[in-house]
Length: 522
Image: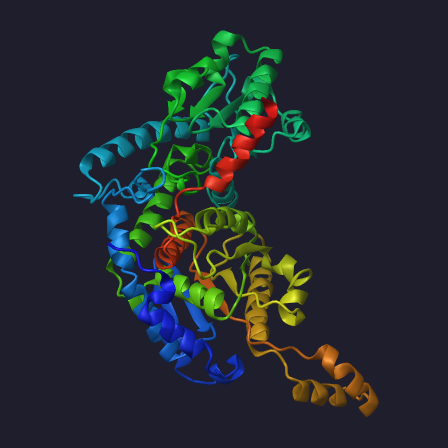
Protein backbone atom coordinates (compact mmCIF):
# COMPACT_ATOMS: atom_id res chain seq x y z
CA UNK A 1 0.00 0.00 0.00
CA UNK A 2 1.23 3.49 -0.77
CA UNK A 3 2.40 5.61 2.14
CA UNK A 4 0.47 8.72 3.17
CA UNK A 5 1.88 10.97 5.90
CA UNK A 6 -0.53 11.30 8.84
CA UNK A 7 -1.22 15.06 8.45
CA UNK A 8 -2.34 14.45 4.88
CA UNK A 9 -5.18 12.20 5.95
CA UNK A 10 -8.65 13.73 6.11
CA UNK A 11 -9.33 12.23 9.54
CA UNK A 12 -6.10 13.72 10.93
CA UNK A 13 -7.14 17.15 9.68
CA UNK A 14 -10.56 16.68 11.20
CA UNK A 15 -8.96 15.76 14.54
CA UNK A 16 -6.76 18.84 14.36
CA UNK A 17 -9.83 21.01 13.92
CA UNK A 18 -11.61 19.26 16.80
CA UNK A 19 -8.60 19.74 19.08
CA UNK A 20 -8.85 23.49 18.55
CA UNK A 21 -12.46 23.58 19.74
CA UNK A 22 -13.20 23.84 23.48
CA UNK A 23 -14.14 20.55 25.12
CA UNK A 24 -15.90 20.41 28.49
CA UNK A 25 -13.79 19.49 31.51
CA UNK A 26 -13.83 15.81 32.49
CA UNK A 27 -15.90 16.69 35.55
CA UNK A 28 -18.62 17.75 33.12
CA UNK A 29 -18.16 14.86 30.69
CA UNK A 30 -18.35 12.30 33.50
CA UNK A 31 -21.80 13.52 34.48
CA UNK A 32 -23.22 11.90 31.34
CA UNK A 33 -24.94 8.70 32.61
CA UNK A 34 -24.16 6.68 29.48
CA UNK A 35 -20.49 7.62 29.30
CA UNK A 36 -19.13 4.85 31.53
CA UNK A 37 -20.90 1.90 29.84
CA UNK A 38 -20.34 3.31 26.36
CA UNK A 39 -16.61 3.71 26.89
CA UNK A 40 -15.93 0.40 28.66
CA UNK A 41 -14.82 -2.60 26.62
CA UNK A 42 -14.03 -6.17 27.63
CA UNK A 43 -12.18 -9.10 26.05
CA UNK A 44 -9.91 -11.96 27.10
CA UNK A 45 -10.43 -11.43 30.83
CA UNK A 46 -9.58 -7.73 30.58
CA UNK A 47 -11.87 -4.72 30.96
CA UNK A 48 -10.77 -1.35 29.59
CA UNK A 49 -12.44 1.75 31.01
CA UNK A 50 -11.70 4.79 28.82
CA UNK A 51 -14.42 7.04 30.24
CA UNK A 52 -11.84 9.45 31.71
CA UNK A 53 -10.27 10.25 28.36
CA UNK A 54 -10.75 13.78 27.02
CA UNK A 55 -12.83 12.78 24.01
CA UNK A 56 -16.42 13.01 22.88
CA UNK A 57 -18.38 11.19 20.19
CA UNK A 58 -17.09 13.41 17.37
CA UNK A 59 -13.47 12.91 18.38
CA UNK A 60 -14.04 9.19 18.85
CA UNK A 61 -15.58 8.88 15.39
CA UNK A 62 -12.71 10.79 13.79
CA UNK A 63 -10.16 8.55 15.54
CA UNK A 64 -11.84 5.44 14.20
CA UNK A 65 -11.89 7.03 10.75
CA UNK A 66 -8.15 7.67 11.08
CA UNK A 67 -7.55 3.97 11.73
CA UNK A 68 -9.60 3.09 8.68
CA UNK A 69 -7.76 5.56 6.47
CA UNK A 70 -4.41 4.19 7.68
CA UNK A 71 -5.62 0.67 6.75
CA UNK A 72 -4.42 -0.72 10.05
CA UNK A 73 -6.16 -4.07 9.63
CA UNK A 74 -4.58 -4.55 6.22
CA UNK A 75 -1.20 -3.86 7.82
CA UNK A 76 -2.02 -6.39 10.55
CA UNK A 77 -2.89 -8.95 7.88
CA UNK A 78 0.45 -8.31 6.15
CA UNK A 79 2.26 -8.98 9.43
CA UNK A 80 0.30 -12.19 10.01
CA UNK A 81 1.03 -13.36 6.48
CA UNK A 82 4.78 -13.14 7.00
CA UNK A 83 5.44 -10.09 4.83
CA UNK A 84 8.80 -8.47 5.57
CA UNK A 85 7.25 -5.52 7.37
CA UNK A 86 10.55 -4.99 9.21
CA UNK A 87 11.69 -3.50 5.93
CA UNK A 88 15.01 -1.99 6.99
CA UNK A 89 16.21 -5.46 8.03
CA UNK A 90 14.21 -7.39 5.42
CA UNK A 91 12.50 -9.53 8.03
CA UNK A 92 9.04 -10.80 8.79
CA UNK A 93 7.55 -10.12 12.22
CA UNK A 94 5.85 -13.24 13.53
CA UNK A 95 5.76 -13.23 17.30
CA UNK A 96 2.07 -14.08 16.97
CA UNK A 97 3.12 -17.41 15.44
CA UNK A 98 4.86 -18.27 18.71
CA UNK A 99 1.57 -18.39 20.58
CA UNK A 100 -0.68 -19.43 17.69
CA UNK A 101 1.19 -22.45 16.39
CA UNK A 102 -1.60 -24.81 17.47
CA UNK A 103 -4.22 -23.21 15.24
CA UNK A 104 -5.32 -24.88 12.03
CA UNK A 105 -4.37 -23.31 8.70
CA UNK A 106 -2.15 -20.55 10.18
CA UNK A 107 -1.71 -17.47 7.98
CA UNK A 108 2.10 -17.66 8.32
CA UNK A 109 2.15 -21.25 6.99
CA UNK A 110 2.27 -24.69 8.55
CA UNK A 111 6.04 -25.00 8.23
CA UNK A 112 6.58 -22.15 10.68
CA UNK A 113 4.04 -23.59 13.11
CA UNK A 114 5.74 -26.98 12.95
CA UNK A 115 9.12 -25.40 13.70
CA UNK A 116 7.67 -23.41 16.60
CA UNK A 117 5.97 -26.46 18.08
CA UNK A 118 9.14 -28.51 17.81
CA UNK A 119 11.22 -26.03 19.79
CA UNK A 120 8.39 -25.39 22.26
CA UNK A 121 7.92 -29.06 23.09
CA UNK A 122 11.64 -29.62 23.60
CA UNK A 123 12.05 -26.45 25.65
CA UNK A 124 9.10 -27.23 27.90
CA UNK A 125 10.29 -30.79 28.54
CA UNK A 126 13.63 -29.35 29.67
CA UNK A 127 11.92 -26.68 31.79
CA UNK A 128 9.52 -29.12 33.43
CA UNK A 129 12.34 -31.33 34.66
CA UNK A 130 13.90 -28.30 36.35
CA UNK A 131 10.53 -27.10 37.66
CA UNK A 132 9.88 -30.51 39.23
CA UNK A 133 13.35 -30.79 40.77
CA UNK A 134 14.28 -33.76 38.57
CA UNK A 135 17.30 -32.22 36.79
CA UNK A 136 20.68 -33.13 38.31
CA UNK A 137 24.06 -31.45 38.41
CA UNK A 138 27.51 -33.07 38.22
CA UNK A 139 27.35 -34.43 41.78
CA UNK A 140 23.96 -36.04 41.26
CA UNK A 141 22.27 -33.43 43.46
CA UNK A 142 19.10 -31.76 42.19
CA UNK A 143 19.42 -28.38 40.51
CA UNK A 144 17.87 -25.91 42.96
CA UNK A 145 18.70 -22.59 41.27
CA UNK A 146 18.43 -21.42 37.66
CA UNK A 147 20.04 -18.13 36.66
CA UNK A 148 18.91 -16.44 33.43
CA UNK A 149 21.69 -14.37 31.85
CA UNK A 150 20.38 -11.95 29.24
CA UNK A 151 19.68 -8.29 28.61
CA UNK A 152 16.89 -6.28 27.02
CA UNK A 153 14.26 -8.59 25.59
CA UNK A 154 16.17 -11.62 26.88
CA UNK A 155 15.67 -10.37 30.44
CA UNK A 156 12.77 -7.96 30.86
CA UNK A 157 9.95 -10.20 29.61
CA UNK A 158 10.87 -13.44 31.41
CA UNK A 159 11.79 -11.52 34.56
CA UNK A 160 8.50 -9.62 34.61
CA UNK A 161 6.33 -12.66 33.93
CA UNK A 162 8.17 -14.88 36.41
CA UNK A 163 7.73 -12.25 39.12
CA UNK A 164 4.03 -12.06 38.32
CA UNK A 165 3.29 -15.78 38.12
CA UNK A 166 5.79 -17.92 39.99
CA UNK A 167 4.00 -17.61 43.34
CA UNK A 168 0.98 -19.34 41.79
CA UNK A 169 2.95 -22.33 40.50
CA UNK A 170 5.28 -23.59 43.21
CA UNK A 171 8.54 -24.67 41.64
CA UNK A 172 11.18 -26.86 43.24
CA UNK A 173 13.73 -24.57 41.59
CA UNK A 174 14.40 -20.92 42.34
CA UNK A 175 14.76 -18.68 39.27
CA UNK A 176 17.04 -15.64 39.22
CA UNK A 177 17.83 -13.01 36.58
CA UNK A 178 21.00 -11.07 35.89
CA UNK A 179 21.43 -8.56 33.07
CA UNK A 180 23.94 -5.91 34.14
CA UNK A 181 27.62 -6.85 33.71
CA UNK A 182 28.62 -4.87 36.79
CA UNK A 183 30.70 -7.36 38.76
CA UNK A 184 29.06 -6.67 42.10
CA UNK A 185 25.62 -7.61 40.83
CA UNK A 186 26.80 -11.04 39.73
CA UNK A 187 28.84 -11.53 42.91
CA UNK A 188 25.87 -10.61 45.12
CA UNK A 189 23.77 -13.24 43.33
CA UNK A 190 26.32 -16.04 43.17
CA UNK A 191 27.57 -15.82 46.75
CA UNK A 192 24.27 -17.34 47.89
CA UNK A 193 24.34 -20.22 45.39
CA UNK A 194 26.05 -23.62 45.19
CA UNK A 195 27.79 -24.42 41.84
CA UNK A 196 26.82 -28.10 42.17
CA UNK A 197 23.12 -27.17 42.25
CA UNK A 198 23.04 -24.21 39.85
CA UNK A 199 22.22 -24.05 36.15
CA UNK A 200 22.73 -20.97 33.96
CA UNK A 201 20.61 -20.09 30.94
CA UNK A 202 22.52 -17.85 28.52
CA UNK A 203 19.97 -16.03 26.37
CA UNK A 204 21.44 -14.28 23.35
CA UNK A 205 20.32 -14.57 19.74
CA UNK A 206 23.81 -14.07 18.29
CA UNK A 207 25.92 -15.06 21.31
CA UNK A 208 27.89 -11.87 20.73
CA UNK A 209 26.06 -9.41 23.00
CA UNK A 210 28.89 -8.00 25.07
CA UNK A 211 27.04 -7.62 28.37
CA UNK A 212 25.61 -11.12 28.19
CA UNK A 213 28.83 -12.80 27.14
CA UNK A 214 30.81 -11.06 29.89
CA UNK A 215 28.38 -12.48 32.45
CA UNK A 216 28.32 -15.91 30.79
CA UNK A 217 32.10 -16.27 30.79
CA UNK A 218 32.24 -15.17 34.42
CA UNK A 219 29.52 -17.67 35.37
CA UNK A 220 31.37 -20.43 33.52
CA UNK A 221 34.55 -19.64 35.44
CA UNK A 222 32.58 -19.66 38.72
CA UNK A 223 31.35 -23.16 37.89
CA UNK A 224 34.86 -24.37 37.09
CA UNK A 225 36.28 -22.79 40.24
CA UNK A 226 33.44 -24.41 42.19
CA UNK A 227 34.46 -27.92 41.17
CA UNK A 228 32.52 -28.48 37.95
CA UNK A 229 34.76 -30.21 35.39
CA UNK A 230 34.69 -28.91 31.83
CA UNK A 231 33.15 -32.18 30.68
CA UNK A 232 30.30 -31.64 33.17
CA UNK A 233 29.48 -28.05 32.19
CA UNK A 234 26.71 -29.46 30.01
CA UNK A 235 24.81 -30.27 33.23
CA UNK A 236 24.98 -26.67 34.40
CA UNK A 237 24.61 -24.61 31.23
CA UNK A 238 21.83 -24.08 28.70
CA UNK A 239 21.39 -21.52 25.96
CA UNK A 240 18.68 -19.75 24.03
CA UNK A 241 20.29 -18.73 20.79
CA UNK A 242 20.24 -18.81 17.01
CA UNK A 243 24.01 -19.58 17.08
CA UNK A 244 24.38 -23.13 18.47
CA UNK A 245 28.02 -23.34 17.37
CA UNK A 246 28.95 -20.37 19.54
CA UNK A 247 27.03 -21.88 22.45
CA UNK A 248 28.92 -25.14 22.04
CA UNK A 249 32.21 -23.25 22.29
CA UNK A 250 31.18 -22.18 25.79
CA UNK A 251 30.69 -25.81 26.79
CA UNK A 252 26.94 -25.99 26.26
CA UNK A 253 25.58 -29.30 25.01
CA UNK A 254 23.69 -28.90 21.72
CA UNK A 255 20.79 -30.74 23.39
CA UNK A 256 20.50 -27.80 25.79
CA UNK A 257 20.45 -25.12 23.09
CA UNK A 258 16.98 -23.83 22.21
CA UNK A 259 16.69 -21.75 19.09
CA UNK A 260 14.48 -19.04 17.72
CA UNK A 261 14.26 -17.19 14.45
CA UNK A 262 15.18 -13.83 12.94
CA UNK A 263 11.48 -12.97 12.73
CA UNK A 264 11.37 -12.84 16.55
CA UNK A 265 12.27 -9.37 17.80
CA UNK A 266 13.95 -9.27 21.19
CA UNK A 267 11.26 -7.23 22.91
CA UNK A 268 8.61 -9.60 21.52
CA UNK A 269 10.46 -12.81 22.38
CA UNK A 270 9.09 -13.86 25.78
CA UNK A 271 6.77 -16.25 23.91
CA UNK A 272 9.74 -18.09 22.39
CA UNK A 273 12.52 -20.15 23.96
CA UNK A 274 13.61 -16.85 25.54
CA UNK A 275 10.83 -17.67 28.01
CA UNK A 276 12.73 -20.76 29.20
CA UNK A 277 13.42 -19.31 32.66
CA UNK A 278 9.76 -18.35 32.94
CA UNK A 279 8.77 -21.91 32.02
CA UNK A 280 11.07 -23.22 34.76
CA UNK A 281 9.40 -20.88 37.25
CA UNK A 282 5.80 -21.76 36.37
CA UNK A 283 5.92 -25.14 34.63
CA UNK A 284 4.93 -26.27 31.16
CA UNK A 285 1.15 -26.15 31.63
CA UNK A 286 1.13 -22.58 32.92
CA UNK A 287 3.50 -21.50 30.13
CA UNK A 288 1.07 -22.90 27.57
CA UNK A 289 -1.75 -21.05 29.33
CA UNK A 290 0.34 -17.88 29.07
CA UNK A 291 0.65 -18.42 25.30
CA UNK A 292 -3.07 -19.16 25.06
CA UNK A 293 -3.99 -15.87 26.72
CA UNK A 294 -1.89 -13.94 24.22
CA UNK A 295 -3.36 -15.94 21.34
CA UNK A 296 -6.85 -15.05 22.54
CA UNK A 297 -5.93 -11.35 22.27
CA UNK A 298 -4.50 -12.01 18.79
CA UNK A 299 -7.84 -13.47 17.77
CA UNK A 300 -9.65 -10.51 19.31
CA UNK A 301 -7.75 -7.92 17.25
CA UNK A 302 -8.47 -9.86 14.07
CA UNK A 303 -12.17 -10.38 14.72
CA UNK A 304 -13.51 -7.50 16.82
CA UNK A 305 -15.12 -4.48 15.15
CA UNK A 306 -12.87 -1.43 15.33
CA UNK A 307 -15.04 0.25 17.96
CA UNK A 308 -14.72 -2.82 20.22
CA UNK A 309 -11.04 -3.56 19.56
CA UNK A 310 -9.24 -2.96 22.88
CA UNK A 311 -5.69 -2.40 21.59
CA UNK A 312 -6.90 -0.21 18.75
CA UNK A 313 -8.89 1.98 21.11
CA UNK A 314 -5.89 2.35 23.41
CA UNK A 315 -3.70 3.21 20.42
CA UNK A 316 -6.08 5.83 19.08
CA UNK A 317 -6.50 7.49 22.46
CA UNK A 318 -2.72 7.52 22.81
CA UNK A 319 -2.41 9.29 19.46
CA UNK A 320 -5.05 11.82 20.50
CA UNK A 321 -3.16 12.55 23.73
CA UNK A 322 0.26 12.65 22.04
CA UNK A 323 -0.51 14.57 18.86
CA UNK A 324 -3.55 16.67 19.65
CA UNK A 325 -3.32 17.32 23.41
CA UNK A 326 0.46 17.66 23.34
CA UNK A 327 1.40 15.03 25.94
CA UNK A 328 5.01 13.91 25.53
CA UNK A 329 5.02 11.11 28.10
CA UNK A 330 2.76 8.26 29.11
CA UNK A 331 2.56 6.78 32.60
CA UNK A 332 1.82 3.11 33.34
CA UNK A 333 1.11 2.27 36.98
CA UNK A 334 0.21 -1.17 38.31
CA UNK A 335 -1.81 -1.72 41.47
CA UNK A 336 -0.59 -5.30 41.96
CA UNK A 337 2.88 -5.81 43.41
CA UNK A 338 3.35 -8.93 41.28
CA UNK A 339 3.38 -6.56 38.28
CA UNK A 340 6.25 -4.48 39.63
CA UNK A 341 8.38 -5.20 36.53
CA UNK A 342 5.55 -4.64 34.02
CA UNK A 343 6.27 -0.99 33.28
CA UNK A 344 10.00 -1.49 32.50
CA UNK A 345 9.01 -4.32 30.16
CA UNK A 346 6.44 -2.19 28.32
CA UNK A 347 8.84 0.75 28.35
CA UNK A 348 11.31 -1.21 26.24
CA UNK A 349 8.62 -2.57 23.94
CA UNK A 350 7.08 0.83 23.32
CA UNK A 351 10.13 3.08 23.24
CA UNK A 352 12.32 0.79 21.11
CA UNK A 353 9.42 0.31 18.73
CA UNK A 354 8.15 3.88 18.50
CA UNK A 355 11.24 5.93 19.22
CA UNK A 356 11.59 6.75 15.53
CA UNK A 357 12.03 9.99 13.61
CA UNK A 358 11.75 8.52 10.12
CA UNK A 359 8.65 7.49 8.20
CA UNK A 360 8.61 4.17 6.36
CA UNK A 361 9.39 6.06 3.12
CA UNK A 362 12.47 7.69 4.64
CA UNK A 363 10.94 11.15 5.17
CA UNK A 364 10.98 13.03 8.45
CA UNK A 365 7.66 13.02 10.40
CA UNK A 366 5.92 16.33 10.88
CA UNK A 367 4.17 14.96 13.98
CA UNK A 368 5.37 13.51 17.27
CA UNK A 369 5.80 9.75 17.44
CA UNK A 370 6.36 7.56 20.50
CA UNK A 371 5.99 9.18 23.94
CA UNK A 372 8.30 8.64 26.89
CA UNK A 373 6.89 5.65 28.79
CA UNK A 374 7.54 5.47 32.53
CA UNK A 375 5.98 4.47 35.83
CA UNK A 376 5.96 1.61 38.31
CA UNK A 377 3.76 0.52 41.19
CA UNK A 378 0.89 2.93 41.72
CA UNK A 379 0.74 2.86 45.51
CA UNK A 380 4.43 3.75 45.72
CA UNK A 381 4.05 6.46 43.10
CA UNK A 382 1.23 8.10 45.02
CA UNK A 383 3.76 9.04 47.69
CA UNK A 384 6.31 10.27 45.16
CA UNK A 385 5.75 11.54 41.62
CA UNK A 386 1.94 11.69 41.73
CA UNK A 387 2.37 15.21 43.10
CA UNK A 388 3.52 16.26 39.63
CA UNK A 389 0.52 14.54 38.03
CA UNK A 390 -1.89 16.46 40.22
CA UNK A 391 -0.29 19.90 40.32
CA UNK A 392 2.67 19.99 37.94
CA UNK A 393 2.82 21.78 34.62
CA UNK A 394 3.03 18.62 32.47
CA UNK A 395 0.04 16.79 31.03
CA UNK A 396 0.73 13.11 31.75
CA UNK A 397 -1.89 10.63 30.49
CA UNK A 398 -1.82 7.35 32.39
CA UNK A 399 -2.85 3.71 32.36
CA UNK A 400 -3.89 2.33 35.75
CA UNK A 401 -3.75 -1.48 35.93
CA UNK A 402 -5.78 -3.24 38.60
CA UNK A 403 -6.83 -6.78 39.48
CA UNK A 404 -10.38 -7.58 40.56
CA UNK A 405 -9.84 -10.87 42.41
CA UNK A 406 -7.38 -11.27 45.29
CA UNK A 407 -5.89 -14.75 45.77
CA UNK A 408 -3.05 -14.15 48.24
CA UNK A 409 -3.10 -16.78 51.05
CA UNK A 410 -3.09 -14.31 53.96
CA UNK A 411 -5.87 -14.01 56.57
CA UNK A 412 -6.34 -10.27 55.87
CA UNK A 413 -5.73 -10.43 52.12
CA UNK A 414 -9.21 -9.07 51.34
CA UNK A 415 -8.57 -5.99 53.48
CA UNK A 416 -5.23 -5.41 51.73
CA UNK A 417 -6.94 -5.74 48.35
CA UNK A 418 -9.63 -3.24 49.29
CA UNK A 419 -6.99 -0.68 50.31
CA UNK A 420 -5.12 -1.12 47.03
CA UNK A 421 -8.14 -0.88 44.75
CA UNK A 422 -9.81 2.01 46.56
CA UNK A 423 -6.57 3.92 46.08
CA UNK A 424 -6.62 3.15 42.36
CA UNK A 425 -10.20 4.36 42.02
CA UNK A 426 -9.54 7.45 44.10
CA UNK A 427 -6.50 8.46 42.06
CA UNK A 428 -8.14 8.18 38.65
CA UNK A 429 -11.13 10.12 39.91
CA UNK A 430 -8.98 12.81 41.50
CA UNK A 431 -6.90 13.19 38.35
CA UNK A 432 -10.06 13.49 36.27
CA UNK A 433 -12.12 15.81 38.47
CA UNK A 434 -9.50 17.85 40.27
CA UNK A 435 -10.88 20.52 42.57
CA UNK A 436 -11.47 24.06 41.34
CA UNK A 437 -10.75 27.16 43.38
CA UNK A 438 -14.36 27.75 44.39
CA UNK A 439 -14.68 24.23 45.81
CA UNK A 440 -11.31 24.55 47.52
CA UNK A 441 -12.25 27.87 49.11
CA UNK A 442 -15.52 26.39 50.37
CA UNK A 443 -13.66 23.45 51.89
CA UNK A 444 -11.18 25.71 53.65
CA UNK A 445 -13.98 27.86 55.07
CA UNK A 446 -15.76 24.73 56.29
CA UNK A 447 -12.54 23.81 58.07
CA UNK A 448 -12.77 27.07 60.02
CA UNK A 449 -9.98 29.04 58.31
CA UNK A 450 -10.16 32.82 58.25
CA UNK A 451 -10.95 34.54 54.96
CA UNK A 452 -7.37 35.75 54.72
CA UNK A 453 -6.12 32.19 55.12
CA UNK A 454 -8.65 30.96 52.58
CA UNK A 455 -7.43 33.47 50.00
CA UNK A 456 -3.78 32.68 50.70
CA UNK A 457 -4.14 28.88 50.57
CA UNK A 458 -6.71 28.40 47.81
CA UNK A 459 -4.22 28.58 44.89
CA UNK A 460 -1.95 26.04 46.58
CA UNK A 461 -4.68 23.55 47.37
CA UNK A 462 -6.61 23.60 44.10
CA UNK A 463 -6.20 20.98 41.38
CA UNK A 464 -6.82 21.45 37.67
CA UNK A 465 -7.81 17.83 37.07
CA UNK A 466 -8.77 16.94 33.49
CA UNK A 467 -5.94 14.37 33.29
CA UNK A 468 -6.82 11.59 30.83
CA UNK A 469 -6.51 8.03 32.12
CA UNK A 470 -7.37 4.47 31.16
CA UNK A 471 -8.18 1.85 33.76
CA UNK A 472 -7.23 -1.67 32.74
CA UNK A 473 -8.88 -4.27 34.98
CA UNK A 474 -7.74 -7.89 34.97
CA UNK A 475 -10.39 -10.32 36.15
CA UNK A 476 -7.52 -12.07 37.92
CA UNK A 477 -3.74 -12.13 37.61
CA UNK A 478 -2.91 -15.55 36.20
CA UNK A 479 -1.02 -16.94 33.22
CA UNK A 480 -3.76 -16.46 30.58
CA UNK A 481 -4.62 -12.93 31.70
CA UNK A 482 -0.96 -11.86 31.81
CA UNK A 483 -0.46 -13.24 28.31
CA UNK A 484 -3.48 -11.28 27.12
CA UNK A 485 -2.30 -8.11 28.89
CA UNK A 486 1.12 -8.21 27.22
CA UNK A 487 -0.46 -8.86 23.82
CA UNK A 488 -2.83 -5.94 24.43
CA UNK A 489 0.15 -3.59 24.69
CA UNK A 490 1.99 -5.25 21.79
CA UNK A 491 -0.96 -4.62 19.51
CA UNK A 492 -1.41 -1.09 20.80
CA UNK A 493 2.18 -0.36 19.78
CA UNK A 494 1.62 -1.97 16.38
CA UNK A 495 -1.49 0.09 15.68
CA UNK A 496 0.15 3.35 16.67
CA UNK A 497 3.18 2.72 14.49
CA UNK A 498 0.88 1.76 11.60
CA UNK A 499 -0.93 5.10 11.90
CA UNK A 500 2.24 7.15 12.38
CA UNK A 501 3.84 5.38 9.44
CA UNK A 502 7.02 4.31 11.23
CA UNK A 503 8.89 1.02 11.46
CA UNK A 504 8.11 -0.57 14.82
CA UNK A 505 10.38 -3.58 14.58
CA UNK A 506 13.91 -2.27 14.02
CA UNK A 507 16.09 -0.51 16.60
CA UNK A 508 19.01 1.14 14.88
CA UNK A 509 19.56 3.48 17.81
CA UNK A 510 20.34 0.47 19.99
CA UNK A 511 22.72 -0.82 17.33
CA UNK A 512 24.55 2.51 17.23
CA UNK A 513 25.45 2.16 20.89
CA UNK A 514 26.79 -1.35 20.33
CA UNK A 515 28.88 -0.16 17.37
CA UNK A 516 30.31 2.69 19.42
CA UNK A 517 31.37 0.28 22.19
CA UNK A 518 33.23 -1.85 19.64
CA UNK A 519 34.98 1.18 18.16
CA UNK A 520 36.13 2.38 21.58
CA UNK A 521 37.42 -1.08 22.48
CA UNK A 522 39.18 -1.45 19.15
